[in-house]
Amino acid sequence: MTVSISDELLLEAKRASVERSCTLGEVFEDALKVALISRKKTGKRKVPLPFKTFSGNGVQPGVDLQSNQALNDLMDAS
Image 1 (cartoon, rainbow, N blue to C red):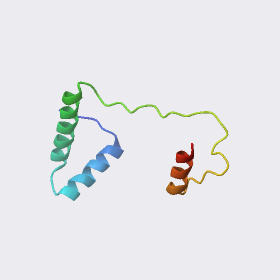
Image 2 (cartoon, helix red, strand yellow; image 1 turned 120 degrees about the horizontal axis):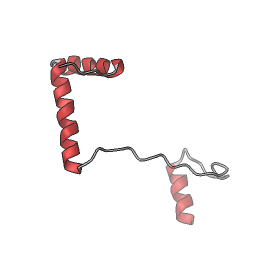
Image 3 (cartoon, rainbow, N blue to C red; image 1 turned 90 degrees about the vertical axis):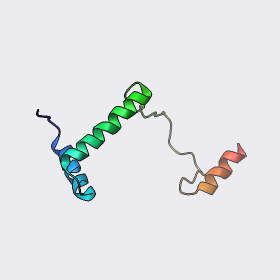
């Protein structure tokens, strides 16, 4: 049997086999087991949710995105 995968995925799998000191086949088997078990538990494939975006003018004046404390203070003030 022949399975076609992308060159990038093959390279990652080869790296994993070297890091884990196992065969390339073992890497593929383990990955396939994880995918199939995950699918059985949920009954469906996990599909990433779309990234939500909103229109507007960006960050409002006075909002410091670099400071968790400043953001918490701002949210508490609301």
